[in-house]
Amino acid sequence: MGWETIREEIIALKEKRNAVILAHNYQPQEVQEIADHLGDSFELAHLAASTDAETVVLCGVRFMAENAAILAPNKTVLLPEKYAGCPLAETITADELREKKRQHPEAAVVCYINTTAEVKAESDICCTSSNAVQIVNSLPEEKVIFVPDRNVARYVAARTDKKIIPWDGQCITHQRVTAEEIKKVREVHPDAMIAVHVECPPQVVEQADYVGGTSGIAKFARESKTSKIIIGAEMGLIYRLKRENPGKQFFLLSPGLICPNMKATNLEKIRQALVNMEPRITVPEKIRKQAFKALEKMLTIIP
Ligand code: CIZ
Image 1 (tube, protein in one colour):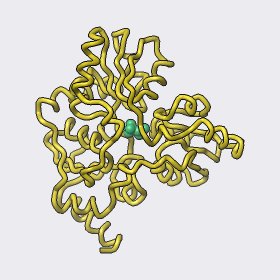
Image 2: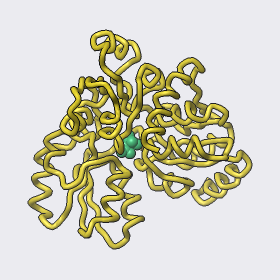
Image 3: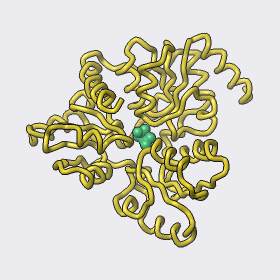
């Protein structure tokens, strides 16, 4: 089946299933183009909770579809590629978090959005790349267990008076960027600004002009007077940035910035998901209710 036919079928199926297609900023171009909305996990969670559509096609990785299922239990949530996982989310289990909580009973638990529903259910509040510092600073506790990304934990620790107890997880994609790469890029493009994801290693973050999540980077790109911006985040973001800023140039900081899980979704899988109404993501009700509290608290603090 040709691309155009697949696209037309998806549009017809969307109507038939009363579906909305939500795509993460890291998705491939063809997926971004067919999506009704693009965003980071925070924005996608908001959209899943507020849409009138009965079916949410979540083009991203499993924890993002779980977020939609947690926030919108009456909707059918489809993850077109059922094996699209997140290695960062998989660095911690609910049992491991329970053990950490036993070691630090006085600490609040903040989980980064890249976590399983089970880990969210064990957490007091969730945060994303766009609001981690604000969320931590909003808590009354002086100690905070921050899971699972150690680089985000370190970034937050430098911007709060609270004691941060990190977990040793990392995003294998953003962890690949090196201090040498950013140094070299500065030499070759002295006129460019460098914007990097907060999950990058500290030696990279320290040398960047802007540090944030994908939506923050998109805002920075829109508002920056500079016409050349080097991006230290998963390569899918570049497509959105180029589309939104036709007069500016964007380059990828490192060739390693590609997440295979984010690239596992394509148009044909979206079509099949809407035909079969599978793979469907659900979360057991007991876990869903607990995880809902952590997500809802974040959405209440940062509406
Ligand atoms: O918050 C998200 O969606 C993640 C995991 C990355 C980003 O900055 O968009």
